[in-house]
Picture 1 (cartoon, rainbow, N blue to C red):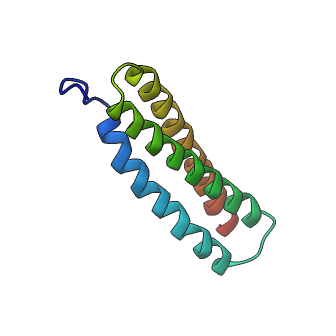
Picture 2: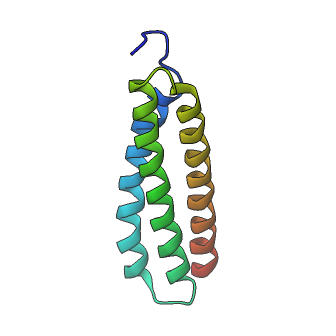
Length: 100
């Protein structure tokens, strides 16, 4: 591994790992609140976000380990991370709308 190739992947890896845990903890909490037509969409959104964050963490790890394809893998990890954040945002918007 090149010492000068510590870029965004070094920040994506721990943040993605933390967000996987947060999404996995939020799914049972949503199930405890109430049963509405939106709760299944919220569960699926959080599960999808968890998978996106897990994949993003794996790709960011690979980008730090392999210097020849590091930049492309790091870009893909960043895209998946941002899509995961958008998915969490939409799930939380649905959650707040269903509670109100």
